[in-house]
Length: 86
Image 1 (cartoon, rainbow, N blue to C red):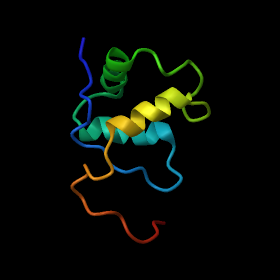
Image 2 (image 1 turned 30 degrees about the vertical axis):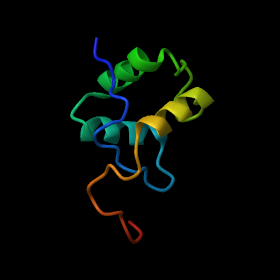
Image 3 (image 1 turned 90 degrees about the horizontal axis):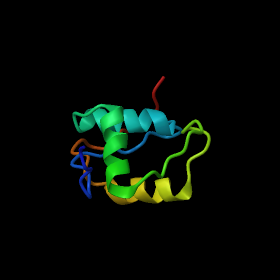
Image 4 (image 1 turned 90 degrees about the vertical axis):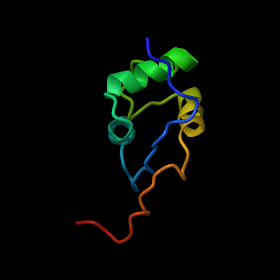
């Protein structure tokens, strides 16, 4: 079983009003793993912190803390997005 690193190599910043599920898919893609591998890695390191509720509607405080701890706002090498998108 894969164990997640303490800090992800790449953690793109979430876009304004982006759903958590969408952001997690982008984090997985940036790290060249599937979403399942990303979530399994978190679970192997931190235990079961996510529940069976839809992730965009109910995320436990412990899961929020883990996501904040394992991602760094400065790890995305791209400049921040500017301007509004249509």
